[in-house]
Length: 388
Image (cartoon, rainbow, N blue to C red; front, top):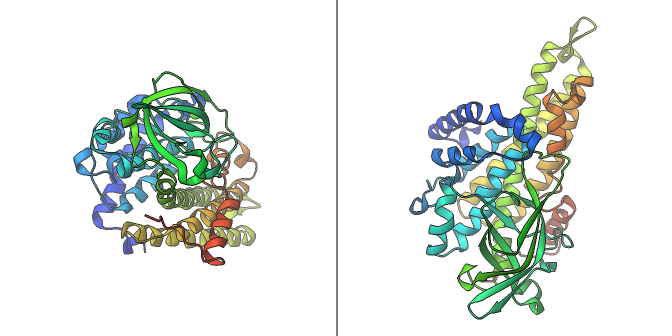
């Protein structure tokens, strides 16, 4: 049972969150899926409820809770069937805010982290580039020091919250000649002159705004540097474990929801005089799908427990994302098949789930890249721990 990991307080939190999402979010999902724009009022409501501050210190408006509260938030957001809405929320809370939490100084945290936790400011994390993809070390965006400013030039792409966010956490090369040892992290306001964003049209995740962002001689104060100059690559690497685990948890949660929906449908749909959950071919396929989902779910809980305890889990978190996103794709594909023709109809949830799920093995590091990272760790004994 999941009670190995969840306390009574966790269960009460889940119950409260599920009610909040049904009341405050679900009525607006169809509109946001259609417009690709999540309205501002919901961000403030999330902030007021403390949902953005689950992993943020109390000094900056957060609740500083264990990581299983985050797991609950992620799981419940998958159940409302909008991968885009879920992505916009967690990209703000666990991509942009994680860097602020770990690398920002006190002044930067007061200016950006506190309003982020309260739902008054929305952030995005800008790492991926049009020519780089998962090749972080190959980034071309530069930040040139000029007196007490940095001048940023370059572009980023596939950035969740890239169009409507209020601030950007940006990786750029401060010493290009050093390769991945020359990357730094900056925070900057959306309205800084020279920043422009173009909205991308996606197969799935329709509710979230995904942008391509250009930096044209963007001048920011030197004080906008986060952490130490040229340490950006190690900062990015440190946070990949959390990002990959998040995507693994998202995957097992959407697969679980798809199975719940399919089970209900199969218990009501009749063919040849009986409900289709009586046919052995479908029953055994359903059993296979449920088994694979449960294996991923329990592994993800185990990795969460270790990460929350401060263990180094880059290998396990990478495995989590690799296996769970593949599983979710397979399970959701099969659940759509259970519905027959209705699975292909937009008014039924599986069509959207299939589109949204397909991003899993691509975003946050493709499965092909993740396999190579795992291979380096298990075959070449490579250690990705920061050298600091």
